[in-house]
Length: 173
Image (tube, rainbow, N blue to C red; front, side, top):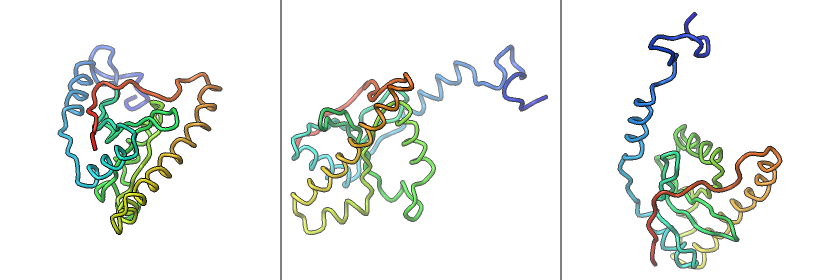
């Protein structure tokens, strides 16, 4: 019967799976979606640069997603996502945000999330030290999750932290 997990379907053995051509076109459309930097994202990039991290901005990874920044922190390559109000419904992450986080983890990436309300609080008063201390704490938390999860992934024999970069631009500040 139909809907039984893909064992049947029309179209010459493809079952319910999309054709390679459709998959190619879908990925091409996904990757070509325009990327816009927000003022908050620019501020985060400048603060990362002030920390001496040489952030790479709008890094396209192998699954077609882009990360707002990629930095090297304590020997680990981390993604940094600046999450504005459109990433949330109230204070809960929206489905697209959760999906991206999950897919990035499955690729072995550890991503430090910078929610807009935390950034607003960290930038209140305009003190550079407060912004960089906040970002250092966010990066530390992401690095701590890398250490525990690296061991778990190695034990399962799966791919570790990383993911190939295909494009990036360095932010100066």
